Length: 209
Image (cartoon, rainbow, N blue to C red; front, side, top):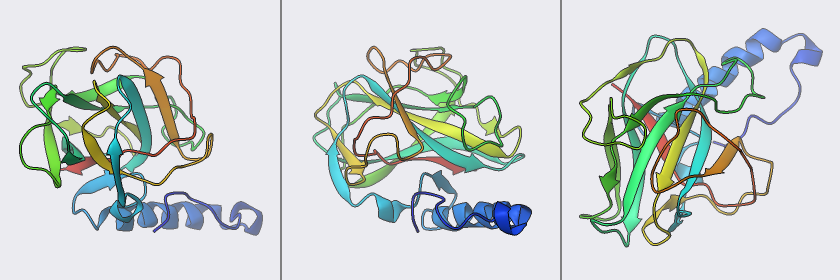
């Protein structure tokens, strides 16, 4: 299952509606390798391990269905973590959830800050909470997806040492990914200056309740 929606243009053949329905099905099948998981591509697109970029938010675009409940966000911890090496995940909306040309705008959910210690080579599922921007100690707060469309997973770490599941190097301005610098593991209430440089993509997923 490829990361990207590439192929012959269905619009020119008068099959636009069918193409969009099949695209939704393709995204659901990609997530079936991780039951309940919604991610960019599939888990098979993340065969490598590498450190994340310190204090850089990675946004990856995913498709979610209105009415579904997301209660956790997930990443894959590969090693080199510690109590002092932290991660946080979040979820952002875009102005028009139906367009594939959108970018992340406002944060609609996030996890608490979490240490990267303990058992390696495992998926880590973090509860969504009501923690304030940059905060921690929130109570579990599942998200009811308001409308079907594109959303953006956010992953951030405060160090360049702990390792995660990642894709091979992806060329600049190619994948539906955006990046933004931050302080520590703060996820801002609204996305700021965005870039899409050549880089490996860290695995993250929204987990359906």
